[in-house]
Length: 198
Image (tube, rainbow, N blue to C red; front, side):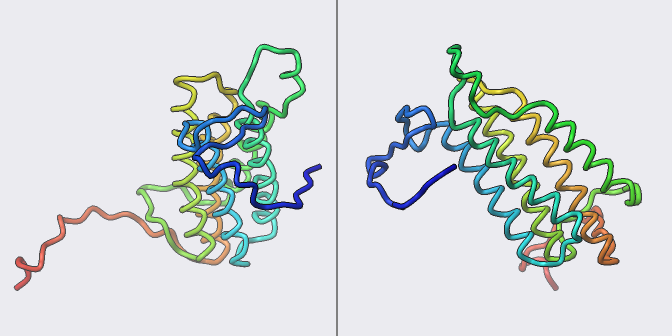
């Protein structure tokens, strides 16, 4: 369990923070940036849930995902080492990715196939889920950038990749249950400037 009785410590006032293993790193490090993107993603999912216009099954699924994102943050927060103690660390496993895929199949089953890209929007819940999808893509890129210089659990990036797909399907599902059609992208001519308007 986590016990927090003090919110500020002043230990980060010089631009550093502590990882889960006690290591001090710059707040601008790739690992901390990735952690921040995952945290932002979780916050947006909270906003989507707060709209109150999500179906019960979708809301339940998102709550599980929020908890899993905390697990993912715990994974990223502790660098992988070769020590035996690392085996006891909380790490994202492949079975969680398989679960995400099952959720994609479940929510996608009731949706019509797309013949066009769609624009983010529709119900407030759907719009927030599209926003979450975009942040999820960024979080994945941040994790992949971290993996270029440090060892990272490969399942973390795969989880985020699959989660962004699920959030896209969930956004469509949210509009579907509200009887709102997807907003289809239509090719348009370049916008004209004020000087071109007659």
